[in-house]
Length: 129
Image (cartoon, rainbow, N blue to C red; front, top):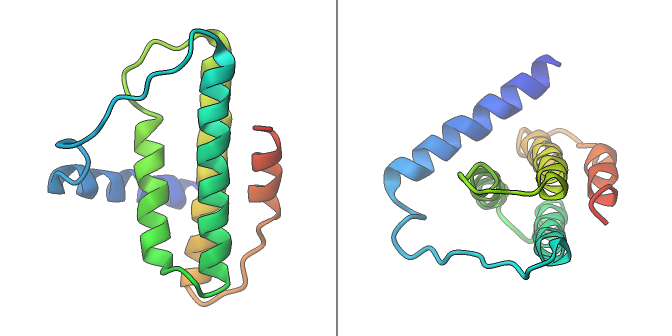
């Protein structure tokens, strides 16, 4: 539980640094979903697959772990926007946040020179599909 608190604190800290540097806000395009919730779920599933691939690329040495961590933080921040979600979209968004937290934990452990266990990340991903 302590590790989870550290990971969430890291996500929020890095997210604040990213926001302070103005990386996202200037050229950001709004995401428009189709009129049904399947559009929202499809966007989240696509984003989930992108993050999953990035994490696996970091583990294989094809991506810089710090870049992947920043990518995850950016995605996490995107889930915290003030938007009006339906009950189903809130549930999907919450599952996506759980996946992002697990993905960040995997990269964090790997970046520290240890062998990560991606099982929790894979299980969180499966809940989104």
